[in-house]
Length: 253
Ligand code: ADP
Image: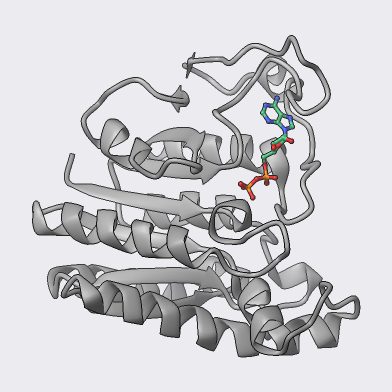
């Protein structure tokens, strides 16, 4: 496996308090740097701008109005990249920030430019870190979840694998946070309507999207010839398992 996209949800990079989980971010930086040293090309799609902004501004709760949220995201995106830069630098890696909107993806020229930029960054052996541009996007202009952005990124750069790190082990036959007897589905060959019926919206405080957006992402990725794995980000060593083709979480082929 050479080229992969790793998407980390808010639940992986933040604590329940809403503030950034620095230990997790440092571990993530170490593992990605290590895989990069092995010769892999890795793009990180990371949420966490609002969480970082809340920490920086010492806010106790998520801002409620759109303009407050966008302002806090703007402060937080800076903070988030500062922290990534600090941790990746520790391991000798250079990071690059790319902020995307739906408009960039839908416009041929902008999309081609963005793709070329990511390709160039990878050729420099840097680690591109992508997020949605929360400070300018409005409802019609956002995907609203980085699952879709992760899948689109994987499609654009023809990645072999998209790893979606979540707060759950994978796709279950029903929402495991509501049904104790839910069973993990190890492999999905096709995202059928039967599979889609298993997914519900998120029930976590920090996550956006839930399983529904992850299945939509799986469709985009697999249709582009990229496998996708949903696995639990609580132990980030799971990334090594995926890269070594060990079976973890739910694999979409
Ligand atoms: P993240 O921020 O890590 O991406 P999300 O909260 O967006 O996490 O999505 C994961 C959540 O989706 C799970 O914690 C669970 O509550 C919910 N969910 C709904 N239906 C399912 C399902 N069929 N299988 C697994 N999780 C599900």
